[in-house]
Length: 396
Ligand SMILES: *Cc1c(COP(=O)(O)O)cnc(C)c1O
Image 1: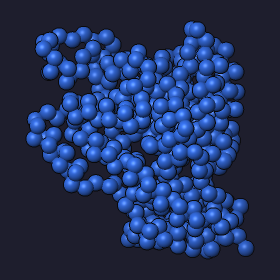
Image 2 (image 1 turned 180 degrees about the vertical axis):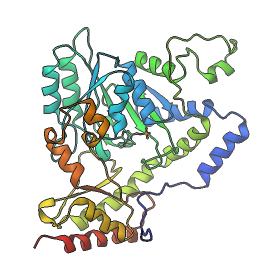
Image 3 (image 1 turned 90 degrees about the vertical axis):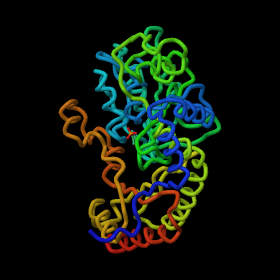
Image 4 (image 1 turned 90 degrees about the horizontal axis):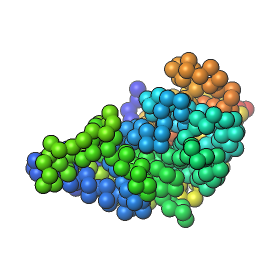
């Protein structure tokens, strides 16, 4: 491997995060407590949701969200194959099934037309949730998706919309932030996301009943949380268990980092968008690059370099290798789920040829470095490498 000149991602931490962690350690209260409670209040107020529940990952949050929406054996969700596997696996953990809808060619977002085709065929009313994923921070067509959920809900079977908002903090439209546009939003604070706690996530909802269920299932199905048990005058051992719950709470050590990162989120957003501008400007005239979609409120978590394979004499992997050899840290978002053994074995019809758009993106996209503290100089190094690889492999 060549020397890394531009890393794929570098978290933006300074002394403030370090001090916040030390303060928690010095306080003697390490697990979920006051700091997490404050983080939840601040996050809810930032995105404008009634409730915010801190969790130890987006994956944990997705399982809690789906459980609260009724996903279980005999029930199902609709999502896209162009996402991280955890979006779909969460339904399977609960015993549910997954129906996959292809993405749109230009937006990379789940296609409402495909969603409706699936809903029309669901005569047994198995589907109880639609899970759109705001790829790279670019918002799905939430108005149409929410309208479909409403249209196909019945008195016995409400169809919920759960946003996988792992990429979309802080994507914002005239109707509000991503993650507050459906019934539930699930964010990720994984190490490379737009703000991070190392590992972590947040669930947002305006629905009191869903919030209560998710809050209890987050901590063993207990009707009181640890903080309440130690601060409320009622005896700490007096609690009830209402279901076999999970263990998905976020500890105060990590919430302390989250509170600091949240304060910096707007500045992170602005800094990423400066780099995106430089990339877009440099790539807009290259005929072998299809520029990423730039819908309203895009938070630009990732810069997806979509190659036009008809203009190149090499495949994406060879192109990616050229970039790596120039010291560029790259990643792939996403290897579409139908490429994985488990999912192929689970659903015989789940094949690339049935999802032409997801397949095309999955095969031809490279994720370029993008992080708040990236310098203009680093962006130029990436651009130079892309141009050189493109010239070398351009069809003659
Ligand atoms: C990162 C990611 C997840 C998983 O997040 P974790 O916090 O690591 O569980 C889920 N969905 C998408 C689209 C992601 O990018």
